[in-house]
Length: 270
Image 1 (cartoon, one colour):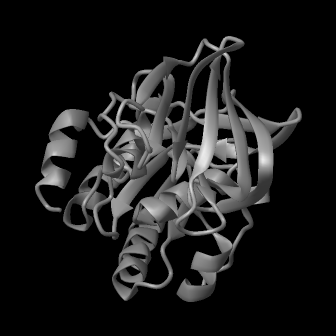
Image 2: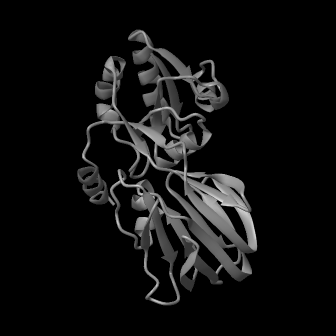
């Protein structure tokens, strides 16, 4: 079995955990590939994401580290996350239980697919999101005007500080803080959440992924698109974004943890 090892590099605890897991996997006869930045901190040979061929990726860090890893991988590799972040909704393992589970991967594992968003403007791809796409103004304290178009029909028009288009996986991230519902990640759809809308009647919508969704920015103020907190695209004042279900879902190793129990546990720590 080949394993890709990725770690958050600004936390000594995460790097220490990575060293221990690296040593234990090699001792177990696993071929370990270490991502370049992680490798530089561990003093190991590194490989770029572009040349990685592996059966599983062990990612040590918080949600940001996992999102960044998903963004970099093409094609996707099944991920198991070890939490060394603030909350870690995407990481199923805590450091003290990590090796006990990771050592079982050699015998095989089940994979859970998580829907991602593909974003386009003028038929040009802008990127893919596992958590969310965020549209916000580049001028603070100014509102933006949006139209939500579903299957070619304008379903809603409103003004707000911004707009989130989230996946079910991302429903426990920024969308939850903005008042959106928690959605089962096994579902497939688009969660549209206005940020501080001018009218209280502008509420979050959950739209099936089989529908055609467009977001029309119709504002006199320039805006930008932020994808998973990793990539920023300047949109200007007028833009139409097409949102589609990605043909490359993220892949997560099934750690046999009930999603709703995990969410309850994480939220009680906030």
